[in-house]
Image (tube, rainbow, N blue to C red; front, side):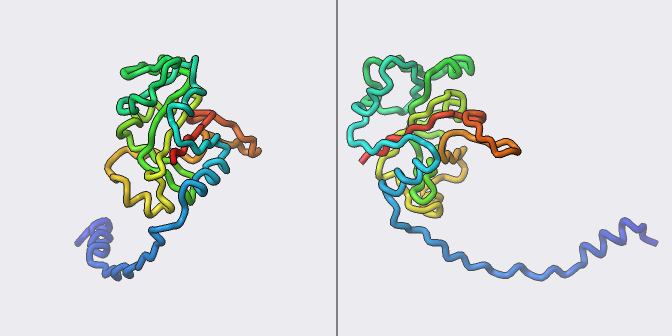
Length: 192
């Protein structure tokens, strides 16, 4: 005679489970959003947004500061007058910096989201979490109109970080607190 446990397991094994219905997904993978929509939606998250044509000129706002620049940041971005901090950096050195300058993998116009994947000009995740200020440069060709379009551009095995505005959280009374889980200030340069 089978034990109660064996009987239950046998019943589970022999159970006929209906096949899951085929779900047809008709996502809109191409949208119409571009530079203007991205600027608007990023700003909705309390980020500072500038649409620029000259990155080195726009970076003059960093003069006199100590800024982390990950590997792969274009040399033309490394303007004079800024103390550029390069890897390897300790957690303490990152915390003492005035901020970080990065590029991105893709930006999503519909949602105002910037996606980092640890690739060129983005660095490891800690670079964009510890400094209190993050300046991200987004080229116009990196803008995807929609989330599905952005996902098609990304490599899913890379460490993806989705950023929608400065780090913020709210307590139970809905008091907003910024800078708890990342930079208090997000500034975005959209390059046309």
